[in-house]
Image 1 (cartoon, rainbow, N blue to C red):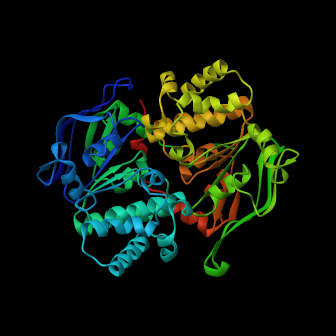
Image 2 (image 1 turned 90 degrees about the vertical axis):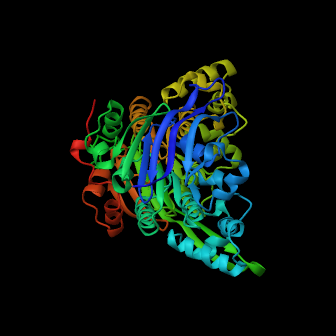
Length: 539
């Protein structure tokens, strides 16, 4: 096969004070025409830095130190910025990991997708609009005409990710770099997007460099696999070879950490209800000219759930099903239209804003998008300690606690002095988790808390949450699109569709004997279900 993208002994240096001198060190990798190469590894292993080096989108202070990046005969490592602007988007496109930071919040989705055509083609306005609508349909965004006019904040996390994919696919690039493109997507949409990328690769001969921490996705889509650790490739080969007969201990460790879909034996659960959600609804209405309602969305539709003390209640469903809206209603970041949310004897819905601030330490939230929820001007230690300081803890004691919590979630204590942009996506997610745990809440509402984490760190965080549940009696509402994770961590699960709960019960029963057709469809859509027993080799 002919190589269209080749990295030849590429090294990328990090600024002074980083945890290692090189983000990439002597990395060599070929991507051939018409094949999908998956790059896997832990958060901070250099996967995303490799993608940014190819696109020449490295952050300030990070530079290509040596080596060549050959794309269609051109060395991108030495290309001028003008040459890169000509290549980016047209022949070499990228799907970014965090759509909320990659999309302009002041421009509509349609306008941003259309920009690719305006820059690289001579198409007219109506032709561009037609192509944008076709792309939105192709990536299965609901109601494309309305989505085209929406701003990024008006779409769910999964829908924003699909808009990014539509933008990258606009001009049928020769090489598509996909940096965790399915991380924020539910399993059914994930299956659709993987099929879409595979179809593009087959029809157009597109080469795909696919970065992921999800071995189910690797099993589903990869032709070849490269495994990265600490900025170096430690193993590469065909997907069958790497997944079924891994030679490197690190690869075996990663594969062994993939959670099983089967739920563990049921635990004895307290009968005490610590959080009771009763007939909660939230409806969004978008008004057009003269105050006329043009669109009504029942984001949460008459939801009733109970959380037992010391248990974990999972909420699963497709992107846009209402999971995150329900989470924000529970912690009063969004005001529900109807219903009650009782934390012990206290109805949170009836509290004033000042009263809710006084009770905020009892119920904390881990957000889905760490880049959007972490103040970029504060250091990691300050972010974790700020709740403690606001509650009256002295700064010295608060920072000492912050160090302990950062270490607890798998970060070096020295990370206390670094800013959010100096961490990988997965590392930022861990900072968010440490911040939520700082106040020792009774209830933790975790909105996709491990979606950005690689499988080994994901396993560590899930074990950590289990230990905190036992040690602190922590009760958790765990929102996730990863059904494998839900199976391992949850005692009960609620399946949401179009704002309503369609199935609810013990996790083993719901996943083992699903009664609703929607639950069955979700389970059947999990990528890489054929992860063989032989692939789960432990050290």
